[in-house]
Image 1: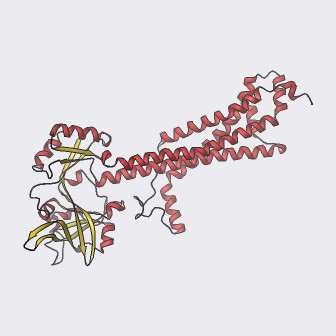
Image 2 (image 1 turned 45 degrees about the vertical axis):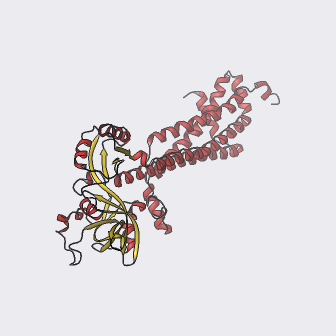
Image 3 (image 1 turned 90 degrees about the vertical axis):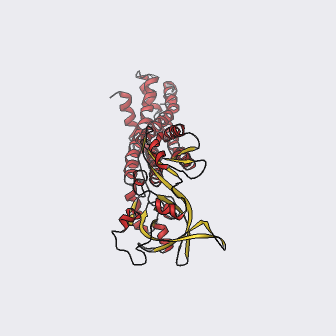
Length: 425
């Protein structure tokens, strides 16, 4: 241990006359601790929000959507075979997308109606967990294995979200009417088409917007209901690397040519993820101010210690200590304060961030309120994901700020004139 570091540690221990300096030192450590811990926790929550949103969005939706400028897609089996030969494509499935209304005993609700191929849709998408029933019951063959009422045994199946079922007062195996805005021609003019379905499944994606607006029926039932014949809206495609989805989408467009066009998940959710990144940067800047305030405390602490120890500095210089040695004493002292605060902040921040979900549940149970109401926010749970590269950046940034805050006081101490300091002693 160098004598500079030894002396700097001695200066951190307060004597009776220097108790005020010790209190400011403690406040500086506490400020850095709070700043580092807050940065780690908030960035972990922001990372968790982004990851959870992406997983939920890419569960319900595919990585790439392929459609035609001319409308509904014909010969989709042939197109699927060509798409699956493109490098990076894992699987594809046809889908039908339409808007409709659900009606049950006087209650109505607008829904996004999606027709899916039960055989291969779940190689591409994931509805989350099934709250009740089974998605396989959309298939007529699977539906015949369950006992339905006399009035519902011949009806086609529909799977709806948990929140939609709650809003409509629907239970498993209840009948429900779907009304299509694409009307049919009658002697009385155009009238909306209505057909009765039976609820064979209720899913819970964990995403309120999806759970309250989506309804799934089989591809064949959807084609019949919307009079599409053998046509579909387009293809949903899963790729092996979600961050190369834009490149793979361009490859698909290039291979198929006009009138096909492809959109990837990054384009479809660009505004949402851009807003999340902006919020993360803004929160980092705002919370870094806590560390800066603590750094000013370090400056004040060191200036006061320099004033208190002016005689000690003069004696050290008269004994042969160089200006560089004096400067290093106070740099070591400031960096030690920063290192202690940063270490404590990392331990505290990581402890909270890694157990945030349990902590949030405990707080909700203790005070009887919901931190993230599902009908207000996109998510119903408080997610957390620690990105250790962020932690490293926080540590390096904090230590750099602490080091810079020591330069002025330590330079002032190194320029102290021994004769001037000891003149009246």
